[in-house]
Image (cartoon, rainbow, N blue to C red):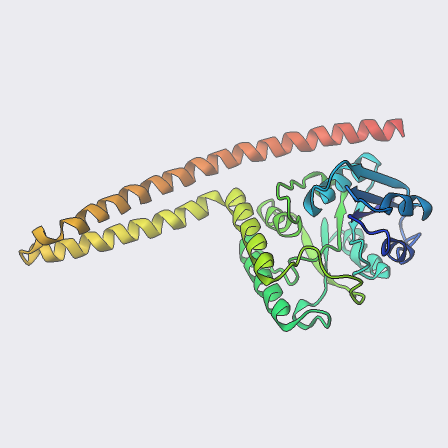
Length: 318
């Protein structure tokens, strides 16, 4: 069995040696452990440092494309290199490398296809009180969107089986963490969390550039992913609210009409008609989006089969 530990990097030449040194060279039950670095258009010596420290595979992106796409490129490369299990960790040495043993344990026990490390964000010693609250709020929102408990939504310390990795679709350019959780819930993928340890920060977060930036980017990602995978529910709720408003205003107009003063409330009747029409159209859009979603699922199945065929061909050529 082959395990590949992938590390998305952007200008990490100073911290990368420390991160690599903490990774386990071998693991129980694993025949081969290899490291894969994704250079996301770095302008420093990240690639040279990776080579000097014996990294087995290096994927170079010609320009900085963001963490989400770097993660996706690393997953694709790990699959092509024949990985049976893929572990993703951050280049800033946030996660304790020794905890990879616990991270992959549920996969060995057949309990999960995706395992996420839980940092205990509610009591995390290196997070500010505001960041802890935002992390808890975000995890609660993702729990509702994904349909299963999510204690740590933004943790990047994750393990994937080969099949689960092939099913990953990342469209965001910001971060993959939230989108993939919602996708896992929609696809009913077996996912679990395990407690992990973290190291002291080596540098400020490049994703968390202030609370407003964090909330706005994560909020857009959640809404986009949830609408993509639960379109009927989203548009049905919006349509129901519009229809309810239209009905309420219609009842109000009818009340005044029966009292003999309906002529003074024609504007309410027009507004009610608009809300009812738009609400009905919104529900129809939801039905259409849901049908399109079925087509997307079929395309994902086709992509999975293509990736499987390509990976098998590459394995035979290795």
